[in-house]
Amino acid sequence: MLEGFVQQLVNGITLGSIYGLIAIGYTMVFGIIGMVNFAHGDVFMVSTFVALITVLVLTSWLGMSSIFLVLLIVLLVAMLVTSLLSWGIERVAYRPLRGSFRLAPLISAIGMSIFLSNFVQVAQGPRHKSIPPIVQDGIVLIDRGNYQVTLSYRQLIIWIVTALVLAIFWYVVTKTSLGRAQRACEQDPKMASLLGVNVDRTISITFIIGAALAGVAGTMYLMYYGVISFADGFVPGIKAFTAAVLGGIGSLPGAVIGGLLIGLIETFWSAYFSTDYKDVAAFSILAVVLIFLPQGLLGRPEVEKV
Image (cartoon, rainbow, N blue to C red; front, side, top):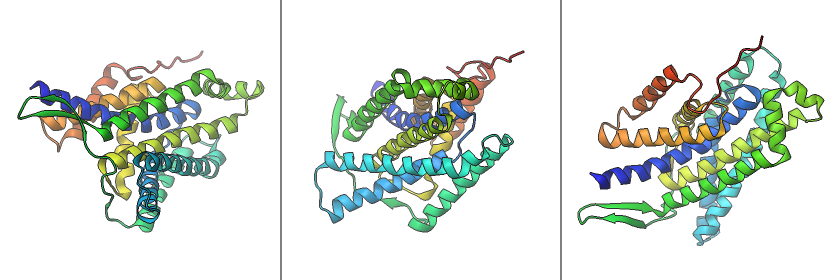
């Protein structure tokens, strides 16, 4: 049925937008220092709690009623807190291990992931936390009497915010001196350092940008679902990492495309087959793609220098 297909398409793009925002953080860090930051999913989870607390403070304590103002403040607070958190993690857990054996930062990232998850569990409790719907209603796209295809205002906000953030991010990476420094560090950190690029600062800013995008994703996630828990860093984080690998880890457009594909696969599989195996479907398609395209959809094949 066409109406059902269009509705799932809308839902899949919304979910994929959130995955894409998280996936960029994975692919940026991997691209610049060749490390999988497994704590990134938990940074996203922390941002959902920061957003929840900020929403409750603004609406329940301060009595703020403007939805636009509340969302703007929540977004800025979540981005700021996660940026500071990620900056601190990079300084404390990763930078001292730079130049160490290859598995050291990976183990440190896993440890930091467990620490963040346990900290939020202790601080906020193991139960799910929920908030009343911030945004309601929507636009009816197709009305066939007994079935309506709707685009909710929450989904519309997620699409607009994601597009704006990605446009700003694309401009920073491609048109500014910071973007050139990031690309130089990605290609050869030692040569970049000899040419005057502050490698440590560039890496720190990369972590901060990735965390800020995770903060945006966390705010959108809370607004969309309205329910979060301390365990939400794992599954969305793994799926976002899968999206980064599917698109070609290290490729920024690939992370976005991979996120959209994972969101669409998960949504369509849940609608037409089984909700229980939606994760299996996403990972199975990833495995099939990697068999034929080991570098991912938009990744560059590694060239061995001789």
